Image 1 (cartoon, one colour):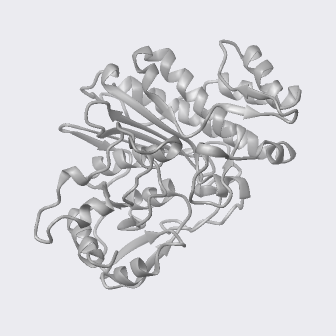
Image 2 (cartoon, rainbow, N blue to C red):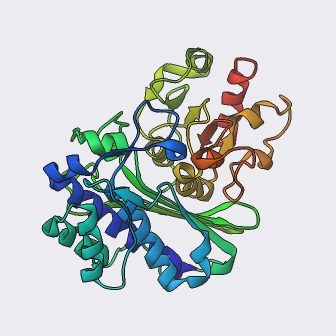
Image 3 (cartoon, rainbow, N blue to C red):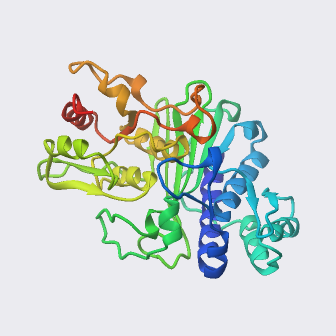
Length: 376
């Protein structure tokens, strides 16, 4: 399945290119933003946005994966509905067609006849990027396509993508907001168990090149004895106290409880669930804690696979807090990705209802759980 990894790296860069093109056409970008409604609305935000870039990216990834691995076709899931409404109030189902010209014609119906913009997007969708150097040569993954499913988050941290602030980001420091928080996330899981086994993350507006001529990519594989990641496991820091990244609107009780295990100024805040888990992967934070069920399978699947490859993981916070204080970490508390909540409908079926903790080190996870037990 190294071929699948190479494909996902390539299609993630295509996705990043679509995201950049949509931002470069500022008047068009404003036109494209729509509110989510009904069952597709994410309950966390007063306003949540769906962009044509989201839908095009998702359907492009679905198309490319299905073309090379048809046995995966029914198990490629994404955040977005692929129905889009144009300025005439017409509902258009966005798909990737067999040719660039056909895709451009379809996209023009969404774009109220804007042939130039439709052609730009269609070209990005149908054009393969230059070869991605990822060090995957010789990698063997003992999995069959028929055993796997895929979660796509076409643009995580959509609000940061829409706002579009180009922050100056310091090397090796977490930066709380800006375009660099927007990520393309593609996660692969085992259909039988829901375990995340492969993840690709692309940062279209990466720290060193916010103008965006190429995305920065991260990947990981965790399957049986195979654990390999594009990122090295961060070395131990000499200063005391754990560092934890949170959402700015996290509960005050959580912030106060974590203060007991974090050193001064070690509670940090950032936008985007995917970006916060990426900060843990990079060692910019030791853990990410979220007490609300406001993230979804598409947010966490890809970065979860990278953390597993580094010896960490992402656990269900509520389940973990139910464990006995002395017990070893129960692997059943790790998030899984194959089963929806039967008692919910719409996007909420796929929420991480118990909150989550993303971590690199099990001993640090135990410290965090000890601090939070009895406080929630």
